[in-house]
Length: 280
Image 1 (cartoon, one colour):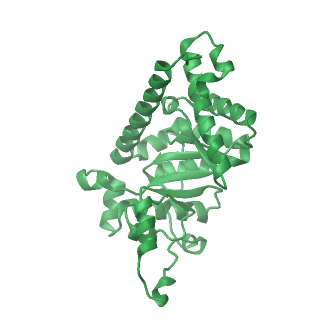
Image 2 (cartoon, rainbow, N blue to C red; image 1 turned 30 degrees about the vertical axis):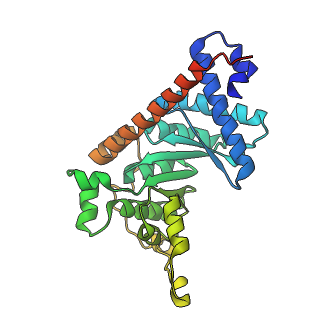
């Protein structure tokens, strides 16, 4: 359907035409999802713009225009942006326009706090801990391990407490949970992405009636109010302070995540290019 779009087809520049098809395809999928699910639909912003604030903003405006053409209102939409400094700054500017953003690839407290200060609607933290298993030398991760915490779960907890203690509007999303215990450790988090196998495992769990409702909320505004932060953690984040606070784990994981998303975008564009022009 995207390849049949007359507005895109009329573009003479092959690169602009392909970009137009790509945006249209994303919006076609997002529009179908908006008909199927309640709440908001998150649309990925091209990761190849991850270090270009104004490029991100232009891409979001292009997507919004396309969504408007198919009658999906802005309040049903989130725009998923990588948490580079440029992405965080784009989020701040877009949110000031009333456009909801969803910051992803957050692997450090500095990124989460900077995103909250920017007013991002949703901040997505990855709970997975493979980096910590195979590497060393990241101060934030090593400090969590010394406290006896799982680094991924500890980061979600700390970010949640920061957001809720200081009244930021952001909602926190935990992603890449690995098992039921991860979920139980994060009960109370605003949003969670749970793999189907974990949901199925919960469904099949056999518990007595007394146990079934005994799970204790771990994260709450009340627990957040009791969390103490250092002066360094309460800084007003800027590009320099964020860069100096991000340890090797968050820098490497952010780079790897971006590479994966860029490769996916390139593959989609290659596919669209191969089947253009479509048969009559």
